Length: 316
Image 1: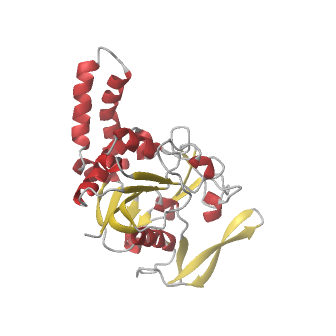
Image 2: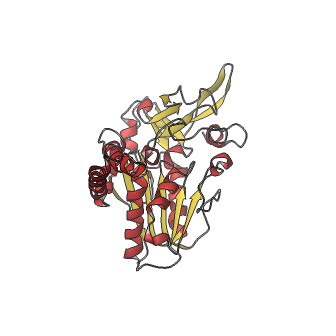
Image 3: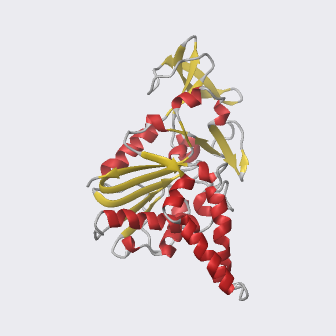
């Protein structure tokens, strides 16, 4: 998975794969600027709770083409008046499209820092191990070359990171890389919050479902083939098992998170602006009208609204 997505020469993300309408899948920032506007309000709330410190840092991990950074900067959060925005992205190609006003490193900063770290649909793209239950025990699955391409090879026994009954035929992901990433991000923060937004599950839920329910591929806005098909030619994404991550996070749906941080007020502002400027039909009026449409997509309980927001709070 690491090679298929991030290989410097042939990886999916290094050769042009990306989120967005002209990419391969849509995430919340690509729906429109409303998502970033609400997150700017959340950033300001964290800054306020910390006593409005100078040098407040926003670190966005897995920034892609910079859609979220653009909308956050356009919203003008107070926390960035004397702060900085780091749009961290591994792909040099995607970093080249970032907006002015942000720093674009390839890796997380060393810290310590005061601020927020946010990652929208990042953990689902981090490489994971795979276990299958055979004869009442969990075994690793490895990948090898076969006559017609890559093939799965059952390997040595391995206990999962959390206890799950090994019912023959069941499979689970082992998300050590995701867990280590969260631990690293938390250790970087001296004071502030880490917020992760993704589709989430638990290890037991994985074991009870067909793997295709939690391990998926996408290309050009369509479901792709099997994960081992077309290496480097499709996105590979896995639901995040929250019980394998460091403890201490609060959890809520994306719909609840956006409601808590004022999406309803922003939509109402847009409705009033549209009623005042509809006759003009200018760009400001169109943007105001689009807020209701964006909110519907971001809050949909059978779509983006059902994503989970995990938030860890660090320091006093």
